[in-house]
Length: 105
Length: 461
Ligand SMILES: [Zn+2]
Ligand SMILES: [Zn+2]
Image (cartoon, rainbow over all chains, first blue to last red):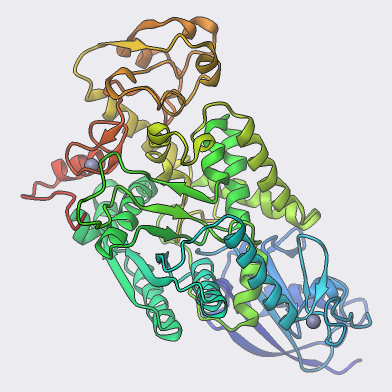
């Protein structure tokens, strides 16, 4: 078994209200998913829905198995598109930020 | 994946993937580029006069926070000498606007810009919380939209500022273009896609040079900026903004258009600016629309401004939620149209249409008030909005408003209102194509239900 991965995740732009109104969370996720593959961002998103999100409105965060269009993901302050998107393999102490562009103007 | 290098400075790690062209750049280069692109938008459109007094419509949200920050930065950097001030509207929504106003106050302190707050309560005698208590949650967005537009103009006039800039971004414009297309409402495209949407005065300017609330220019300097980049700019510059949904029911139709735009962006990010550009190009093809004659032909542009409030959801509206049952906006629009018709003095109205064939073609069958806005005031009675055939080419057509009501067609927002004329609201003086403006119609309904004395649309102006 791979070691758990400590991470910092942040929710802003209105997403914090889905996560106990708290912007920054220190978490630790399993090092591997159910199939034994290294944990990536896709797995993290599932894990967050199952473990961190108390709000029932999952569709405001995920749609069709990925983050909802209009939610930006930053991995260590870079667009996740530059890092391999959902396939990016998480490293210890990575910082992952989810920002909604959909709220308020 | 190996880290990408910034395509501009070639030194730092790329952090931003630009949606408009796929460019990979670092945070510092992104911030510089974003600012310089807004500067180009401003200078290429001659948006500001040197030394001009400009009010930034500030909601505390991401768009207006970024707009204020960028304008302040560019003003200092380029020595534009603009006199900038933040202008906020307090709709009176507890738990929503009170929090976002705190963000505006922090912006005001951070940027060292003065702040003016005007409230619905002071202007209309009704806060949105009171309106909702009266009319319920359905349709309240219409009240808010109609009230907000006037509130910004009145606030600007109180500050003696003749130009209000708003934080509308490319996604907002694309969304409005789509909504207009889906409604078959092409004449309104030019308003959606023009960077400047004036509300020129029907009355002559005051002798003392003071700004009248009927003569406030509106513009949207961020209309070519992606919402994604606005949020990233705020993130990388660590700007303090407030984000939440308006607690009252959002407009479902706009929400759906927004979802469509965001889904398209995921597949093909260039789509957003392409929709904006298509909207600009299509607007040029619509004859007689209000955007055709910016500045050149005097009063012909006035009428287009009166319905603008619904198109320009600012602040918390334009929500992404699509869960409200019916389209509350449409419901309210219907009621509003009926109210307007009820005000007609008689059942029958003479409708005069110009014989000029070019004008007739330009009707596009809807929005004839915009197409006909060059007519002198009392000539401009129209009513052929729902006629899709050539019958409207006649010069004088009697219309039975009662029959029209019975026709079974859904009234649209631009349905014929018998007392159509260009000018000012006879009650509050605001620009209106009706004898009584929408805000006053809504207020009348509210005040009837809650008898009060001396409630008028008041304040400066
Ligand atoms: Zn760079
Ligand atoms: Zn009025």
